[in-house]
Amino acid sequence: MSLSKAVVAVVGATGAVGREALAILEQMRHPVGGLRCFASARSAGSDLPYAGGTVKVSEISESAFAGVDVAVFCATSGVSKQFAPAAVKAGAWVVDNSSAFRMDPKVPLVVPEVNPRALEGVARPAIIANPNCSTIIFLVAVNPLKVRFGVQSAVVSTYQAVSGAGAAAMDELTAQVRAVLAGEKATCKVFAEQCAFNVFCHNSAVDVATGLNVEETKLILETRKIWNDNGVRITPTCIRVPVYRAHSESAAITLARPASESEVREAFVGAPGVRVIDDRAGNKFPTPLKAAGGDDVLVGRIRPDPAHPLDADGRSRYWCLWCCGDQLRKGAAQNAIQIAELVVA
Image (cartoon, rainbow, N blue to C red; front, side, top):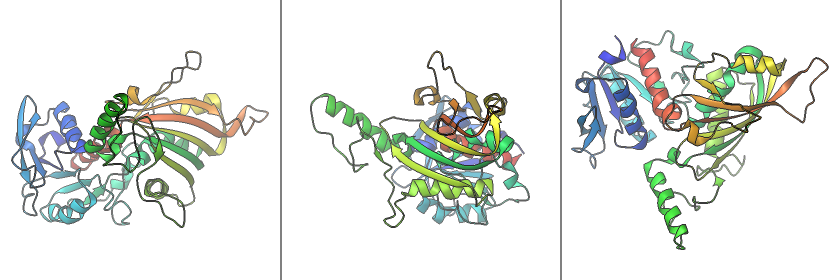
């Protein structure tokens, strides 16, 4: 069976990630007859635009998954924990965007460009976890270097768009910008800090003992699970920025083996899901606007770490890069649809 012939359910269809999943399915010309949309009781009965018409939203329930081949969950972890087991019981593949099952050792955590082999031997029905958005974008960008040279560690700083906090956060940024430009006080409801014209620590909770916020902890643990490498050292700093969609990340990487700049650049040639934009002379590199709405993770600013001079052969284990990826697409819905394509193939 291919995804085009499967009955696909989108749970949380009215949210930002759910709507993006529907847009991707529409681009794939997935038939309306093989599509079911679920949301909370508050949204049930509404119509969503799809393929030149509309699709009706039904209320999510434990009995809603009869006949579903694959259910893409685009809702909260609480919704996933409550209803994903029911979808599995009904015989469906579940691809879950939330954090509910990511660190469950029995659940594969998958980025198709990085570790598709994690799906080998997994039989339907089962739950497959979608990683966190910042993890996906980082790993798609850096995995070509791991494949070619090995990666021992990375210092990663993320500049995360408000789309990661959902449609309400995007609306809040719009309202705040309008208020500030009108000389009025910005109202904060989604974020504790003003987002417009400001940057701040990612809005997830901070562990008082470690100083890490939840987003940073996810980046560490999920990278280790996906790479199957508990020894890789990840030093993250996750920041929220006043950008609508597409996250940006700066990474300083320590390779296992030294490489020349030409070898580093060659590693990205033909790498799945990657597009290099690296024009030093023209000062043209990846930006969130260039990444927004696209399927690829954009990589640029490829350069040797100036803190570690090249050796006599022009090689180094220390390299820096900058990447941008659409949080709603590759960082969430697109990655989930790619997984769905693999499991129903």
